[in-house]
Image (tube, rainbow over all chains, first blue to last red; front, side, top):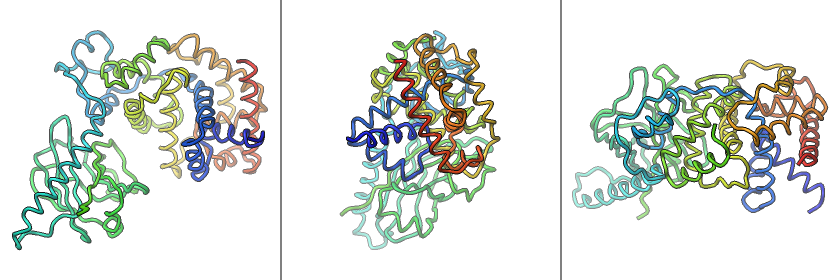
Length: 254
Length: 187
């Protein structure tokens, strides 16, 4: 490697950490990182060196709600009483009121796999009903949104070439006053698109998909549900608030 | 406050799914990450959202931390800062109150600014970059500090510093190369 190439790599890594590269340059560097160990080492170097600047601001205690949000988003249980009493709970964090059992890592991933299995069951169930001509068209797409802490789930299905998405809420989910759950469609390689208010009361619901979403259903995508302020724009171009759940959309392949 | 070994141990346990270790890690480090996010995002609500995202990433990525990647706290700070940059990129048109470059420079003078979070190693890292930043030309130093603490792009730096885009890019690059030389000399 020539000196100028090496310098180029040093600068790319430094500016990647600094955040001054534009989107195309960032993407190019991320590709380089996948197969260039020296680029990764250079990145780690700058993360450490420039990262030291992050030590300068005097610490500020975050509100307890942040930790609540972390545990909720990850589907972790509340900390156990012993831990809280030992004084290691995050500042401002109330002591937990239940004892913690074993928690496994990667709940979100497990939930995603469970969602796919359940989605496959939806397909299967529908296939079994095909004998009945009165049945609605079998779903081409399915997804299951699952709230680990409460066990609440939603089954989502959509037909091929359709604009209606059926959402079956398997129970009631409490939404705090002033908040609203909103469903976003997130293609793997694209920006999220707002589909509308996410139902939280028991029963069957229907949501409408805009043309671009209906056309994208064959591409890898996820459903994302955010808890947003009820007063926030219902036509927002990007999600706000807290990400509550994500679930991949399974496609019928047979 | 927890030292490097303790934080590394909690990170390692977090990677194995130990929730208590994750909680201890959060309790020991979140105030430093939050302070940085507040500084970059200038908005408590956005900083809190970014902090939540950062620790979700920490839980998910704890197994990718390796001691040779450096001190655990700076690794955590990097994760938080990438979240802040993502937020800024999404919110780009919305510009927060600008901070004068001169105020950035005062950070270098403020020897009390270092948090009590970690002791020797982090103190040395911060001292090293402070000393080396002082060897940069003022425009180079201001560009690097504004980019770090405000997440400004080249174009935004050019506007803020009232200089042509090419000039600003050059300040950043020369500044970073000089920084690297200086840090290597001190190593």
